[in-house]
Image (tube, rainbow, N blue to C red; front, side, top):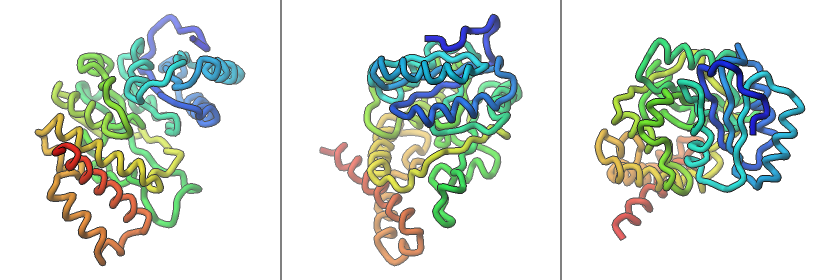
Length: 294
């Protein structure tokens, strides 16, 4: 359903979001999108993993703020996150798709920065930085999505590509078939897609000014850390080249060393939550390798 009728001309970029039962967060995201530059330069395509009645309820709620940009809302059945993003991106009118999670609020001007990046750097996937809002920060702890050496140095790697704040030419996304619709469970769908984009010839680069705020910590979720470790082993099994195991931190040698170090005196030098998260990730990777041998 279109909350706002499409404009005459196609927008430069399509913002794609998949979400489930987070209407308050989506309203804040709508407000963040409304603070962007030219509202006619982008459209928002959203898939809700919710019953049809809940989808209609959000449509009614969003209509109360009459956003100036085009919005297309789909949903009504529960899909994997990759399939939900594919559904949202299926009819994208922009020549660029920006994957932007429901809890990622783009800075003012961030969407324009993604568009400018693709005009300047054709044939690339753009990676925008993510930062945790200060009111959610615990001490000096940095979240995994903030600990990205390549972006700090001004570049990017395929491992930096996520559905949180990454853009790609629409034609390239369609050429590789989007996210793997058969990929299930938490984690792995982003690097799996990134490796297929890389095989197509795309390079990955940082988008200056394309930052977003990530409204939530992930370092506290040990179940997701374990699942991500196991899922990344699946990525390596599917894409054994390109040093995937080392870059994803799941090479068997690295996993063994990491688990031993995290359980020893050296691991106690880390923030306890960071240590627990990294242990869960390494344990998930070890379990992934064992499961593959069974």
